[in-house]
Amino acid sequence: MLYWEVLYGLLVGSASEFITGTPMPDLGLVVGLSIFCSMTLATAVGASVPIILKKLDFDPAISTGPFVTTAIDIIGVALYFYIASTFLIN
Image (tube, rainbow, N blue to C red):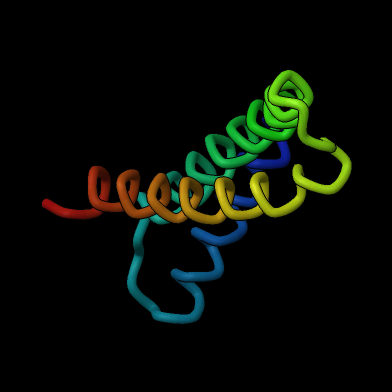
């Protein structure tokens, strides 16, 4: 599924250059890499949280949604900012 992230990064990089008129070659890389990392992390968290909650005697069907959504939102934004600051700040 890596090709979807690469395609998305290329599209965003091309669109940003078209809209702003300024070439930003690293923007597509930042978006593609952050989407890839976020989706990989979402898969790992989405698979592990129900297992952990079941071992703690919580109902995984009810409790998984809030934990996974919150974790993915917070960690995904943090990853995006980290990757963007690494690549875009000179």
